[in-house]
Image 1: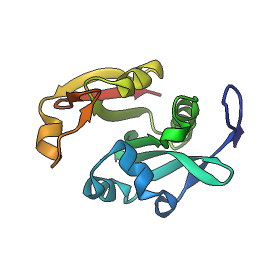
Image 2 (image 1 turned 180 degrees about the horizontal axis):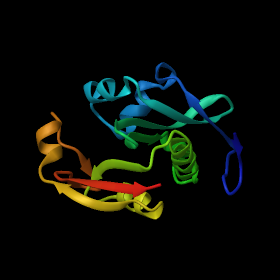
Image 3 (image 1 turned 30 degrees about the vertical axis):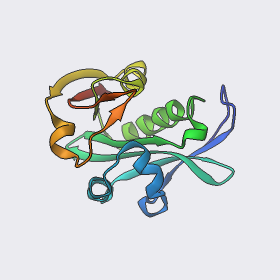
Length: 158
């Protein structure tokens, strides 16, 4: 599906095989290669392409009956803040609903632009997982000079 409305650069939205998604792009949102490799198996990958190249990706996977989790949502830095991520996530949610998914969950840091981004699209905070980023990542994760420690679990009913 071609999408241009409100975007500085038109994108084509589509499903892609996990093998086509550049690892470097996935690492933009999740700095753990081992973590990425674990959730890519049997995952649905949705991509935004510009001139045939993947510029954004959303990786989701069924975690329970009719419940999917978004494990990765990444946009190359040169394409950020143009609405591409929002368009892609909306596309992914529509496609998940077509697969009979009725609830979508995800985990994100307790502060930063990602939290606002997901809330703008209707996700609500459901839980806090204390020390998640301290326990599950070898290297500390910083954003705007602050270290991520706790994970927020968000959900959206479709």
